[in-house]
Length: 208
Image (cartoon, rainbow, N blue to C red; front, side):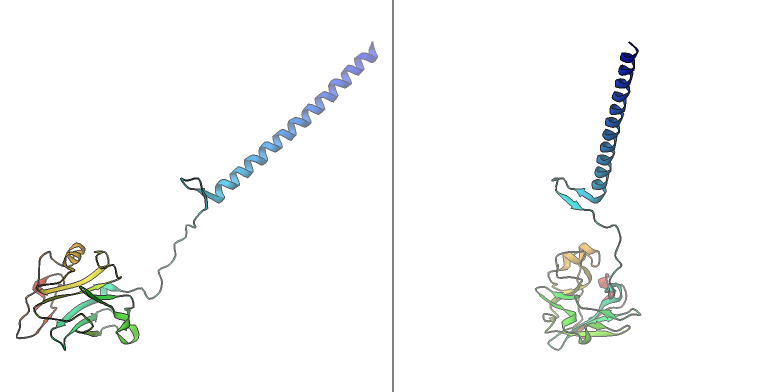
């Protein structure tokens, strides 16, 4: 009788040890799965189409050197005729790289960096773009516009403009940018054969 009781107690103790070992293995497996899932959620970003993509860095890159200081560039004179020119002045304290700056008179356009020696306008100086390069400068009507790209219909890309006489094709773009009044045009004086800026470039009254 005592021997049977000891056998039962031993079996119960063995069962308890086995049950404890199984429980420990189960907990370890659950912990490993949770860690793996957490690692995956921080390493990938899932798009709406369920395709995983690598998360993008959040750092902001510095602006590249040589950024065009367009606020320092302005059209200052338009001289009419075959020997005429568009004068562009750099009123700032730094030389301005003009590669990628476009002079447009619809439908003609030119990258200033390709026609100005050195591809820059030195601080406090100006350059003259010949009439032939600027698409002709007829006193009867035309325009001169400066852009930061070849997207000539985009008001976000135009930063300087003047229209005279019968005008040109970019007036609406300049008006959309707020740098020229809608429907406005300068009337050149034939006696002088040019228009020159004296004041606010967005005010036709400043051109004479």
